[in-house]
Image (cartoon, rainbow, N blue to C red):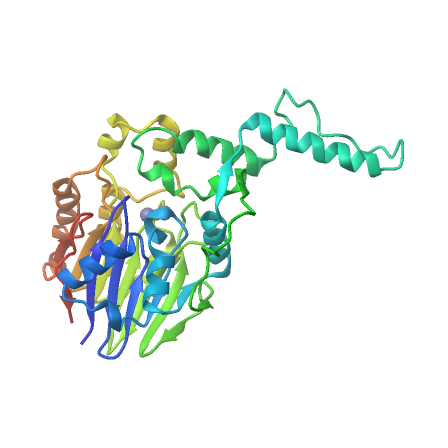
Length: 345
Ligand SMILES: [Zn+2]
Ligand SMILES: [Zn+2]
């Protein structure tokens, strides 16, 4: 018996339990520990029996409750190494610096360097501080990200990991907020196992440092997991073949996003090749590239600002209806505010 319980899915938090008869894994911990525990109990899942947490990427809606939950349960966390590092940067207490402060720091550093330099060495300074020409791409991205994230009520914007790049560590912090009971690294494309669950991580196109989707296999059942992706890349299509359960992003309705409340830069981010999958893109995959093998198709990571469950459902149903052989597929919608009834196979 394999069981999958989506505890939450959407821009404000993502977390799912995948269980075999022997092993239980939490995929992402995007709610507070308290809320995760509450939802697990409500869904009939015992948090104390979890064996590990696996992380898709470092965005806040996937790691919000990670440290507290892992420490409370005393279980290991599986990341890719770049994701672990990015998560630690995000967790490190910090303060934001303004653009002027950043330039001042650069100038001070350049001054220090030039003091050490042999005169007339020909190495140029930091450039015109007023022009911004010397702005490194990473810092420029971070400043843009800060501007985007400070827009009120923009839930997707808070995901941006580039924020960490423009922030400085507070060395006064006494307790290590990144402490975890154990950390295990995996690599995209290389399968690994937790108990009797085999896990294949695969790269997804998304604006995180090393984002992955997963295929979980146990007791002859295969579960494909692909949310937070800008488009259906061919490697993703390949990994989602032969799945018995397919969890697929259906993030936004294109018209609602275009006409909706997000500022233009954030709309561009969501729409980009490293943003989120639209209802239409999910439907196109279901119609043209999906092999039709799943008993359950779960539409996930629906935006609350730019989508309606009925729009996502209708787009997917229309796509599946075009393929008569697929009528056995049961279509389910994961929700942000309540756990979904467990899928059992
Ligand atoms: Zn997300
Ligand atoms: Zn994300």
